[in-house]
Image 1 (spheres, rainbow, N blue to C red):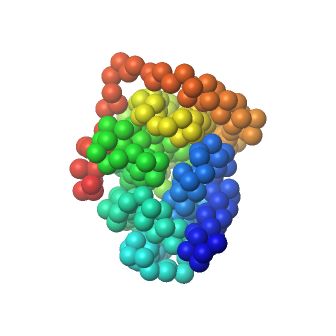
Image 2: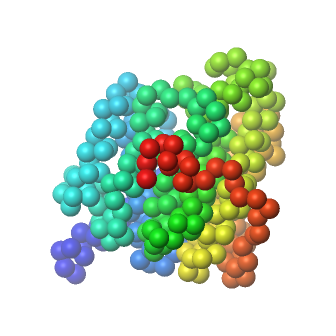
Image 3: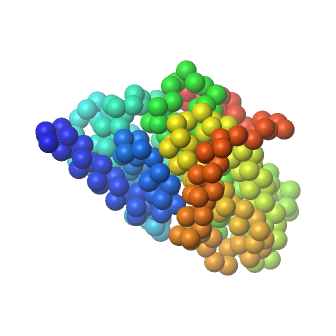
Length: 320
């Protein structure tokens, strides 16, 4: 094995460990990709995970750390990302892995900037006032990642509609996460529920997770789940255009994450009494059902497209 191949193999192994510890759900789904795609997905994930951990001063998505210097940490993320894309060693395996996969798949600084902008929103103590604000945030932290994942899987930039559907899957994932983690986010002084929704429910600022507002919180979580369903259904149209192994992996991930959002909705006011997660047996079941879905490959016919589209979210956010 040559030096370059050995270096790549080391980055892949470190990235594999990152996804194994950072996301059991996505780690399980990623094993369904062919080897080359799987390794590239791992390397992209490692960068995303590391950026998130640096921005939030946490370890593998654990408890949030000191948020007093988040703006400086975001500047550090941008500098390391740019160095990695320029082919310079960064001293951080996750950023070096991003440079590797970017070189292989044509990812650009503009792609990365769309994601980094989401960290900047958190750094500025941002709160969404409207549903549009919420969806722009979801675009940055997850929709833009979905687009990069599609590029890593071999989707061409000219295939705009397929990239739109990949964005939809990222949006669906993030909406499920917000619904599940709303109480944890509140403990970290973060709120991704739009202010307009809180006003509609007659909830005072900072009081949405209090016990006497659990029914209203459940109602808002159901709204998040409804948005999730629309974008998840749209994503299946794009998945149908992928090679079989990619299609199987993506449909598995979609089933696993939407199950989280559905469970939050089903539990109602009790959704946050204990953390919602999917068991190993459930993941196997979702993968099995996704295999059949990928084999049959008959995407749903939508009665209507989701209201929020990638082009609008990216344009209003000032990112490409």
